[in-house]
Length: 284
Ligand SMILES: C[S@@+](CC[C@H](N)C(=O)[O-])C[C@H]1O[C@@H](n2cnc3c(N)ncnc32)[C@H](O)[C@@H]1O
Image (cartoon, rainbow, N blue to C red; front, side, top):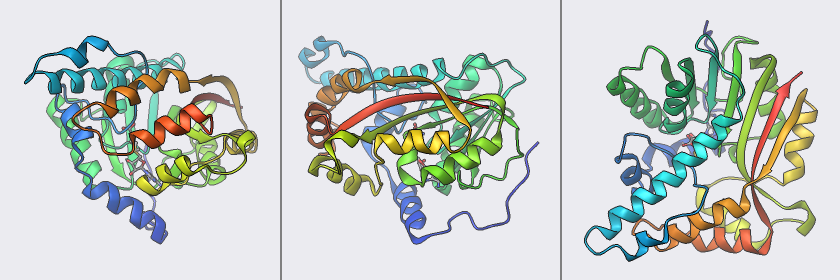
């Protein structure tokens, strides 16, 4: 059952700026990859790339590199979903900050259950619902123009939920309070995120550049665990994916769809000021 919220979706000037960014985003680094198989991701990849893609002869070289990047991004979504737990077809899942919907589509094809996605970009909602319709899964996979801080879904209605690179836009204490409300007892929350390293103290220049580029606020690692603990979300898995994501960035830096932010990511990961983490936590 879904209840709706009457409060405005965008509450702050900051949220309006974030929504506008995603409403107008048409970056080939997302669109050209998504066109390969209709799975549109707005997240990064994990795993080693096949170095032979860099030696592919022109004119096929560009497409070969792009296909390899897409494979690594899909592997990241699969890895996230490996940690959602045992999900049967009668379960309900939430994709919080769902982008163009790639992770939701994979979740439905894997678990056969209902998946709801929320994003504050109306353009993304329209795009993702259109994709679900084309696949004939729009009865089970639905995207909504809603704020994940106040999603309007019924308390305890979700067996699992995830944020795939969307926590850096919100206050974690507010977000995890809403997730604790939505999850059934024993339900699982999975997060993949970049976070800054508390030990290096404060934001390095490379991390600040990433924030500036995406209009986001990368949180320190400690904030995740404080906010989880404050909201009855108990970590069961914490996996450092930093080493696993570096090859993706190395490949992306040499790709025809590089955006210029690649060096900041590579610097931040290599200098140790930034980590790429998966955190899975149970609602108790
Ligand atoms: C980097 S994209 C990730 C998209 C998607 N999770 C994926 O993996 O492809 C960040 C997403 O967070 C969404 N977002 C940011 N703040 C939000 C909020 N307060 N409520 C809902 N969605 C939000 C953006 O609209 C965007 O869809």
